[in-house]
Image (cartoon, rainbow, N blue to C red; front, side):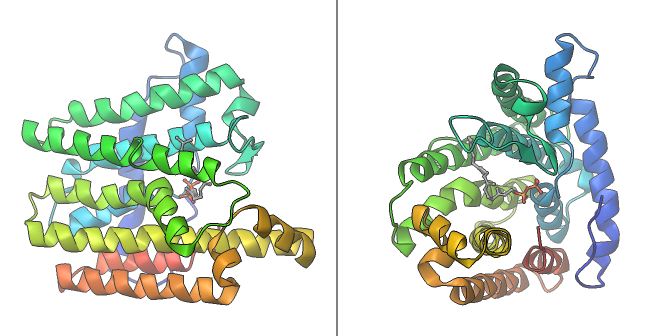
Length: 300
Ligand code: GRG
């Protein structure tokens, strides 16, 4: 794992152990590559490899801030990574973004085939809910609450709905409010639910859950603005300034609506607000501050 720390902190020292837990838990959940149907199971594992695992780290960071043992967080960390991996597999396919590369290697439909990629996404999605349902570290009420929250975040009122709105908005110029609403669903909902799952695991009070939601919403939106800013910088560097502008005219992005500098400024303000929310959850919310710093300083 190539995570490098933006600040020296104690959570920073625990990140490798959390990532190792995640890797082990994912390995135990995913059927082995040799299990029939072997090609499907191999492709599911392929789809889950690589990535920064930010969503899983958010589950662990929120949970640790609320005093939770990692055993109670593993299933939720796996579930959000499985939903995320499925969304990327389907997003990359023909009919959606039709991308050849993901995480520096061929997308699932290129490495395997389109039908396999559809099935990989389907199977990863259902595995996410199975992970929560069969987790013995949680009581039945917590499992139902987690399954409900994750289904809501990833379904038509969350991530899938945001993707539908995004596709319907192609070649339209959105208002800032419309763009924020789209991304609150498309990428924000899954990021927000990482905080909610930790709150459920910890039996957190309504007040704490409310503040965790504020943290998650700020991080989700800031993450997306940052993503747009990084894309815009990469496009401009690769295609030249004119081509970069042409691209922005076809798809509303935060830099296309606000300009690059203002978009970065808005993201920074949201990261500050997230750190502020973290401080009001606990005087020792260092894991949440670490994540805000890490995401703010990422360059890919
Ligand atoms: C197709 C159902 C369906 C949903 C797609 C989230 C999403 C909805 C599509 C992803 C498209 C995309 C690249 C959006 C930009 C923000 C984003 C989610 C980037 C990828 O997340 P990272 O950077 O990825 O956390 P890694 O590879 O680190 O896991």
